[in-house]
Length: 92
Length: 265
Image (cartoon, rainbow over all chains, first blue to last red; front, side, top):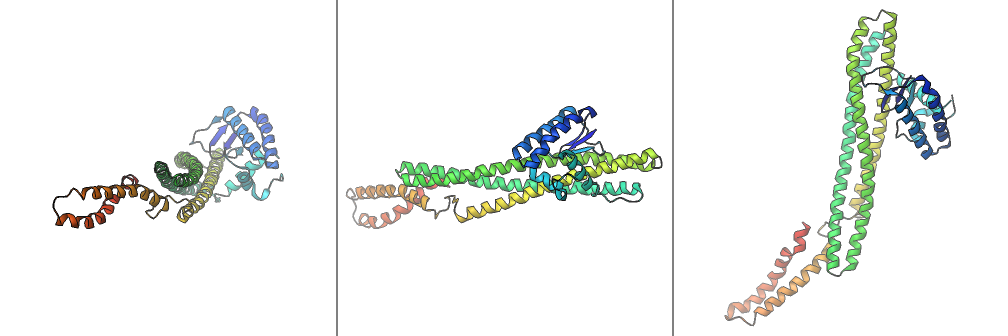
C-alpha cells in the first residue's frame, strides 16, 4: 500500500507491514490524546521510521493517491490537531 | 479510530477540495495541470520569503556579534585601566547580547530547515508537473477505455494530494516566517531601546570613560613634555608665545592619535 509522509514523499509499504504500523499508531494516538509532546515526537518518529525502512520510496515523478497520509516528522501535536480541525480528537 | 487513519482521511478530504472537478475528466486534467503550475510558482515565492526572513536574522546576528566583540575589547581596555566597574558593565551587556544570539541561532536553524524542506518540496512538485504534462495528453487521447478512466481519476487524486501536501508545507512556512518576523521586529525594538546598547555610539558613556582613561595620561605626558622643553629654550619671543599655543593644540592632537580611537573604528 502507498503511504505518504507529509512533506517528505510517498512510500510503497508491503501489506504485511500494516499490523506493525497499527501497533505504532496506538502509541501515537495515546500521545495525542494525552497531549504529551515528547511522547508524541518519539512515537511519530518510530512510525515514520518504520514506513521508511519497510517501504520503498516512490520516485518524485510518480503520480497517484496514497492509502495513508502521515504527519511530517517535525510536526507538533498542535499542528496535527490543526489538520484534524473540527473533527477534533473524538473519533469520527 | 487511530490517529493515522483519522489524519489520512481528513487530509485526503481536504486535498480533494483543492481541485475543482469538471464533468469531463479530461477538462479536470487540464485544470489540474494549470493549478499545479500555479502552485509551483507560489511555492517558489514562499521559498524566497523564507530566505529573506533567514537573511534578516543573519544580519541581526552579525550586528550583535560586532557589538559583542566591541564590548569584549572595551572590557579589556577597562581592565588595563584598572576600571573593574566599567569592565563589569561591558561584560554584562555582552552577556545580554550572547543570550539574544543563542535565540537567533535557534531561529536561524529552524528557518534553514524549513527552507531546505521547501526547496525539496518544489523539486518533487516540479518532477510531478513534468511527468503529469506528458501523461495527461496520453490519458486524454485514450480516455474512452474504462481502464484509462481509472488512471485519469488516480492521476487527478494523486496530484490533488500532492497539492494538499505542498499547501500544508507552505502554510507551515508562512506561519514560521510570520513568527520570526514578529520576533525580529521585537529584537529591533529592543536594540533601538538601548537595552542591548552596542556601545558603538560615540555618545556611549562606557566608551567615553575609557577614552578619557587613555586620553588623560597622554595629555599629562604632553603637558610635562612641553613644560620640560620650556626652560631649555634659547630664543625668547617665540618661545614665550609657544606655551599659549601648544597646550591648546596638544589635547586635540592626542585625542586624534589616541590608539583607542584607531582600534575602535
